[in-house]
Length: 284
Image (tube, rainbow, N blue to C red):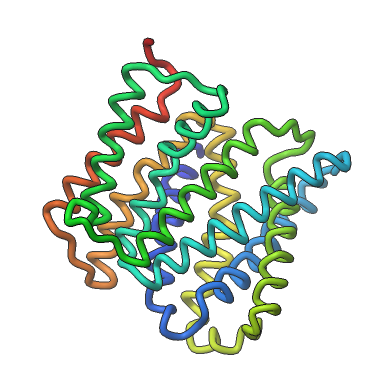
């Protein structure tokens, strides 16, 4: 069950950029993000009620969950969708999954983590890979890549906050409550920006939207937490290291994207570097 949950989660999470890319000419990226997480919270809410999870949170816990929701659902996922709109799905996925690099950098600055030779090598490899993937080696960088970097950085801050927060509730409940705050923030932003929240543009893309909403944002989180429970958090986190490669293959097969040799080399370096950076057992 653990391996099956791992594989399902990998395929679902790796398909976000590929499945949403064709929708970018139909619906606003942030509106798509809003409605797919509405579907996700409904699925997770049903799971939460079915398992009869008890919620016992202090005001401080709720504040932390609110901040986590704003960082993840509102900021990071919105930035990621904007990256998909302005760039290739493969590049958006690869840059986004470099978040372990930013987690280590921020944690080291705050004194929460220590560098080691292994992690230092990983940092060099990952940054070198990102330079190739993003095109920085040509001294240029496009809008989509900037959005992907913003998504990766905000997600890294979200991860750090989740690690340090002492929350007395299960992961599904954490996601339901944090999603709700993130959705509220996103709704306010769209309303103030004058963007309609109407899901009408999605009528012509119902299969893709339901896959993203119910499948990725709902079922994907359920199978991810199952993988964590069965395999351990460390093993389950490998999903995010494998996602760029799987997303790239899906992008080539399903939406006809092409990748250059320097992208492939960068993808390999970024993945290897992220693996070394994310490794907790390393010698000083």
